[in-house]
Every structure is written in structure tokens, then in C-alpha cells.
Amino acid sequence: MKIRLSFFMVLLFSSILAGESKEYLTIKRAAQLAADKKKMLVVEFWAPSCNPCMGLKRDIFDNSFYAEFINKQFHLIKVSPADSVYKPLWKYYNLEYQSTVIYVDAHGNEMDRTVGYNGDRDGYIAVMKEIARRKNLYKDVVRQYRRDTLNVSNGYAMARKLATRYEFHDALKLFQRVLHSDPKNNLGRQAECIFRIAEIDLTLTGSFTKMRDFVTTFPKNPFAPKAYVYLINDLMNKQDKTGCLSFCESGLSKYPDSWEILNKYAWAICTFKIKEDYPKALSMVQKSISLNPARPGTYSTEAWIHFEMGDKAKAIQLQKMAVKIFPDAGFVKDLATFENN
Image (cartoon, rainbow, N blue to C red):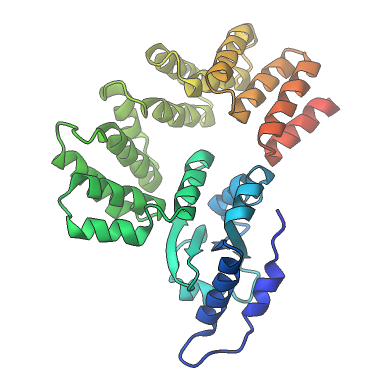
């Protein structure tokens, strides 16, 4: 993706209009130039030491898979602590977190922002597409919510928007209010609200307790597989082989057609190098691919299993498919590992 960063940086040293800060003038002019090209201005704050920032750059802003969409819809300014304008713009936008992305309208006004990144590429791109269509913008969601704070749909929309902005404490209260206001689940958001509450609690406290409660006590629902993946990842990180495999089996028994759990179970078998279960892992990951053939990581899982089984050619073939679907640096690195070993 080609970013004309230096061009926008020049604007930061433009003449100052009376009554307007240098930062506002710069953003306003950059936004107008973007609008002339029928694009929206995006200001991406990042730092090399910020994990969510680097995840966003790797998965979204610097990834060639999304370059066509981003270049068509947006003009991107990247600002890091190494830039002299970083602190002035940080103050101008009243930021709290490095992993903040600001979306600016043609008049230089902030339309929306996102803060943080949890690795959900599809979810983040969906948010970007909504913003590009001027749909569910923060100001509109806030306006609708203030008109009727007791409306369950308004509360749900506001909670979701706050969560994308890392305003977790307020989002948590609203998700809880939605549950309290809609005990019969007429809105159909009960499962998601409980899952989001567990997800926020995990982010704020590092505790998996609510996520475990969610998968064990809440009825079968579309968010449970995502919760299982959180918990399986935690057990893998802790090198808890027995607990991880047991939890994988439990999740798969409840959701036998979940591509997420099928892939994660297969990856756990490969990670723990349980060679006698490699055929089982292959069967699971291939079923996962059949259920969701567009996901590159699943091809990579199968590639690693074949590599561990000694089938280097098949591993390379599958890893190339993963790279073709999504040219992630990690996938490219794994491909080189297969080719050079």
C-alpha cells in the first residue's frame, strides 16, 4: 500500500489561519484534499512498542489483502512517536491510547474513532465499511441513544460503539442494562451481551472466569465457539495439554460443526505434537476448511500438520494457499520454513 505520508506532513507546517490551531488547519486541509478524491481521511496513531498498533498495521493497514479497499475509500496518515507532530495531534484529539484510529469528514471534523484491536480482522473491516458508508457513526448512535435512553436497541447500539472505542466500563454498564431491560430476549441480543461482558471482563482483569461461566452455563448460542477459542488459547499458552485437549473435546461435542473449534482442536494436537492423533487432526481441519474455505489460518493449520507428518510438498502447497488468501507476514515466514527445511 502506497502512503503519501510526506505530502500530508508538509501540511503540518502550513500557515495558520486566525483563530484556528495548526493541528486543526492541517487536518482540515488534508480532509478537504481527501474529499476531493472522494475519500475519507484516516489518522492512524501507532507505536512500535504497542501490540494492538502493530496488530492493526499487520492485519489491516499494511496488509496488501485490504489495500484495494482502503486505498479506494480512505486517505491514510500514519503518525508515530518518532514524528514531531505526534504529541500535538495526540493532545488535539485528547487521546488516551496509542492504538487509536481517527476518521475525519470533509470539513476536518472527527466522525468516529476506534481504539485497540483484538485480532478480529473481519470485525474491524466491518467497522471500517460501516464508517465508509456513514452508517452507525458515533455521533448518530449517541444522538439516537440520548433521544430515548430506555430503548433497548439504542442501548445495545451504544454499548457496541463504546466497546470499539475502548470505553469498556461504560460499555459494560450498558450491556448489563440491555440484559436487565430485555429479560425475555425480545431483541435477540442476550447471548451476545453476555459474551461481550465476559470479553470486556477478560480485557480489563485478565480473568477467564466469566468466559468459562459463559460456555458452561449459557444455552447453546452462536458466540460460544468464540468463547471456547479464547479458553483453548489460554490453556495452550499455559502449556496445559490435558486441560486443553479436554476442553477442545468438550467444545467439539457441543458444536461439532464449528469451524473455529475444529481448527483450534487440530492446531492444539499439532502444537502438543500428539503424533498418533495427526490423522484425527487432519480430518478436523479439513472439515473446518469445508465449512469456511475463505479462512487462511485453517490452511496454515493443515500445512503444519502435513509438515509434522513429513509431507513437505503438501505443506508448501497449503501454505501457499494461505498466503494467497491473506499475505500475512507470519504465513510468509512459515512458508519459508517449509521450503527451507
